[in-house]
Length: 289
Image (tube, rainbow, N blue to C red):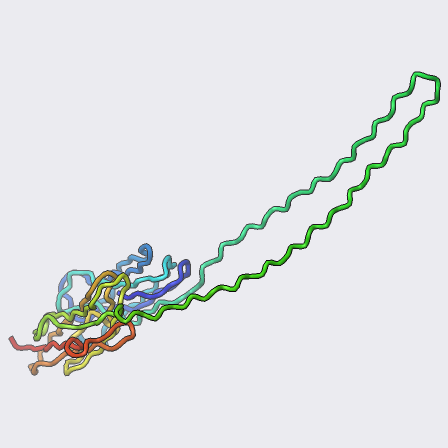
């Protein structure tokens, strides 16, 4: 699993290649692909091609492509091994890339409907009734209705924009930075079997923590062994204090001495390494009973 920063409402694509290394004898081996934000955006089971070989140069890979719209500021990409295969086969994930496609569309602001100004109606002047006398009837001249002079609209006074007050960001609290350690559950593992490296942090957090590591030793990765994490980094999930990396010792027919696999934690500003023990762990691979 790997957490990364996203923009809510923005569109992204996920691309990766998947294949199967080794010779499985059980049921199909598959990979569950999940993109998780505030909700599950992708939850797809894929079946990588199975070449049935231990030759890494002949392992067949298939490209997979997905599109999703983020709904949170932090999104998690997760690959889970699925299937009943056996110790002689593993799902491989390669060339993983999450690519930004487009920003969220802005919500349009509705245009107000202009109000209609009423046209004044002139009031007619009544005509005087004739008198009962013999005097000549005079028709009064109507008084013209005055035309109202429009009052100019007042010019709005510009209100100055307030200058925002910058709030200083407090320096990070050194005590909040966790210490990270690594241990192995076995000192020696036989070819065809598995062992586990456990990476832990001193305090659990509501945020995931990405830990970097490197490999060393006489055993050759991809030939003598494989690791469940491919990218030389592992994520301790949010709310958890540890995670594991599974080492699978690959079986061959050669008679050879025991070979070491050494995982070494690499420094990062988001965590501290212990001053002495706990920076690395070693497992020996042997083909002897």
